[in-house]
Image 1: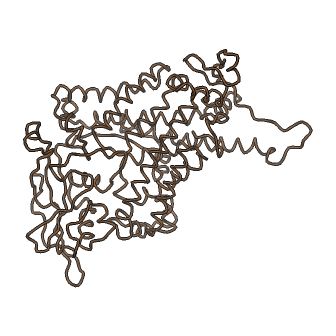
Image 2 (image 1 turned 60 degrees about the vertical axis):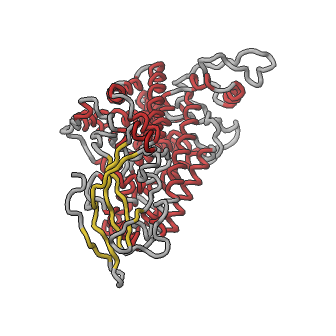
Image 3 (image 1 turned 90 degrees about the horizontal axis):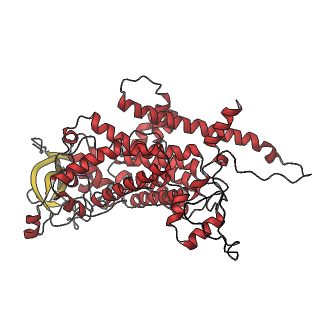
Length: 566
């Protein structure tokens, strides 16, 4: 029993935590704060057009419909918007999240700021419907939730030497990092996608992804052997190299540098919002302070060693501390002692303990029990989700998975199981006479063949992103297309703000339609002659053409006759 208690504390009590991960934790939490900052910053300019009262998918209508769930609606749709779903509340949530993420970056009250960020982002994701069905949202919510157990307590914790990171929290964050890679590799194999079997998956990857970059244009034109090599390397990294996480320290360091270089390459050649930045940040936890100190400038290294826990050690030559500077002798830093907790000061002899001090052991036991229960449920749910990829018929209890699902803190990942075989772009057009059509310009996604694809990540243009998914399916599956047409007929300012401008400044159009184009990167010869980055071909009407009658009623005047991708 005593051994079980010691093992439990070893996993969940920060007093027994990872003393040699103070800098790694500090770096990760600052990076997480910046990622949250990018997410809320992007929402400030989009949220009203996406789910505002006059947006494409109004949250107020969604929540009104979900009210039929009764009291369970608060569990299935955990959102502050239940208090008030007005546009002002939407903006308040975004501003609160933005402010909290900024305070997290400067390391003030990190646990409280992480909680604010998590609640605010979950409030949006739960009510955003089609605009939040991304794996990146689940990744951020899972990492943000687990970081509540990683972050040091206190208003100004500094390096958090008195509250080192709990081992279970570090492991589960690395477990998320591992699953993002490994599960993505497994679904590629399980899907039976011939492009992965034939190593042709990367041949048109840079062209057909959601939001390409201009660097991707150049990489696309490299020879086939390069693309075949990167396809093989992708599978090797996702299915093999990430297992270095469970090997000794030196292997984990090698894995960090390989995975980091890989993520930087993805960031430069594709806009996957904050996804790759988050995976890169999670990789910081593969390192320990011994290695990180080798890359820290001397004056910062001395400051860290003076203010961090005395158990901190380094592989590099030690720097004289401030006290020992005059003696010019190296600072002696003892190695990490995994069995000894951080001791807490006791009450002076002869003084009666307060009620808070008397209850401290019981409160600590309760806190650790809740921590163990919550993190244990997260691990169980994520482990089962992983096992089901390998053994889909395996019978295991699903109640913990179903209970955690609304909070997006125990997710299943799987990126690019099936590769896109063509690039299609939806374009909205308006007309006054039904004959001459003018296009609404987009901010981010490809449209003008002469404009190079940009680099926007970690900024996430959710409207442009969703239209890429819609272009691969039918308008009946994606109500955002027909809803956008209706809003454009009314020249709704919040929806128009999602575009780069409007061709109808004086009066609204009489008709609006959505058409489909197919895009290809130009060849190097074509680009040198024409200066164009893209060539495109018109595929036809994607969704019904809408018009507004004098009485305000909106009706369809033309329907697509054939599948425009055929």
